[in-house]
Length: 466
Ligand code: AMP
Ligand code: ZN
Image (cartoon, rainbow, N blue to C red; front, side, top):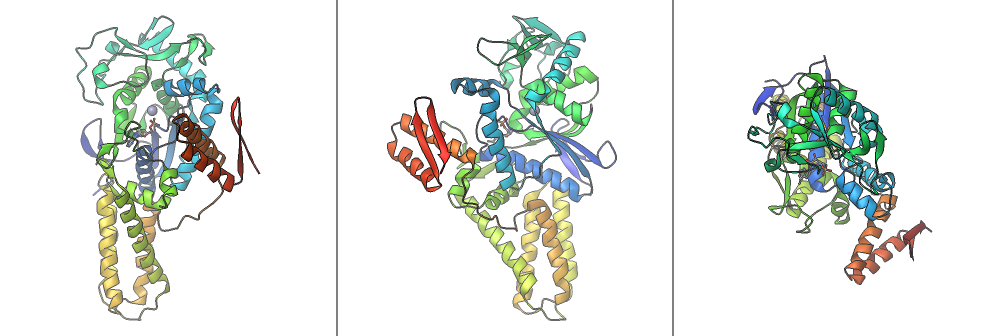
């Protein structure tokens, strides 16, 4: 059976082939760099990594663009509160994101694109929309008139025909009940960063960046557009409305969305205090590859319930595979052994491939590998595994690892990065504010042990390396 994916747009599982020969043009919505990525965000990015690795295993080449949202409501609010420019504020979290993705072994997309580096293109896209009659002005801001795009709602499968024409929304994020004309260009507010452009002094709304950067680098029709389920509405719906109003062509052929990650059956949220970052996981003593394995092991369209037990089980599973690989590489095997092992290996490989072809059914793919490992271990224990079968078994593990990438252990680096220092200082300031002086002192000591000296000044905390 051919490679197929569930397409949110058609609500069907469809066979996938790219539009342009062997090249897959894919756009994925990247991080909003206003904070450290949590493991929920990382689940979505891990799914996208598995997706691109599997496409490559199937012989395609990738042309993948991921945006970095570095201007947006939350970023502006936080950077202003800290008296920093957008660039100073987002640099820390952009670096932290790149560090995290490297540690989680996420392949780099062919291109990262920052919103603030594409303001000119966004302005011209908004001018095109204006010239085609899709926009209107109100108090200096430009809005998209969704009533002029009759298929609005086709991705989220909502019927918006009853919406009140002319009702507007200014914030970047909102829910379904709030389907309204959304902002393309926001008029400058006092003290906020802005760009003085022919369409007014202001700054872009969140949605326009993805339409513009996707089409600039990948053309008018993408093969795949992916993200987390929370982006279906309004973000992706708005991307379609913008792009298709400009080109008159389908914006993306396949829309893939990853389900959310919950923690101990609850939504991960700041108010419950159950947000984990990759750094938290590593500080607790788990390896990055254990998290990678856990995030990848649940098929992306199923909710993933994160628990520390699950993480421990992932570590054990990886250990099992590493031991098996070591055994294959180092044990001495007889010339003749159990007949049929070559077929057994071929069967595992077919099952593995078919599972991933089936909308990336990672759980079934792992099942095929573990069943084979169990069978092979039994045959080895009985002394019946033939030397001639070892290379094929190792090749199967290599295929598994080209997608899951967990067999190589992470080498620990004890040095603390600048981003870590900034984060710990932020946490210490927070701890002091909430009068948790024990934690504040603990952080100061932790940093001191890593050779970092803190100095509290009236302008905030300064730090240097000893
Ligand atoms: P953001 O940085 O908030 O723009 O989110 C980056 C990506 O993470 C988007 O694709 C979101 O859909 C996704 N995301 C956010 N929260 C979760 C979650 N709890 N589980 C899985 N993915 C998430
Ligand atoms: Zn986007």
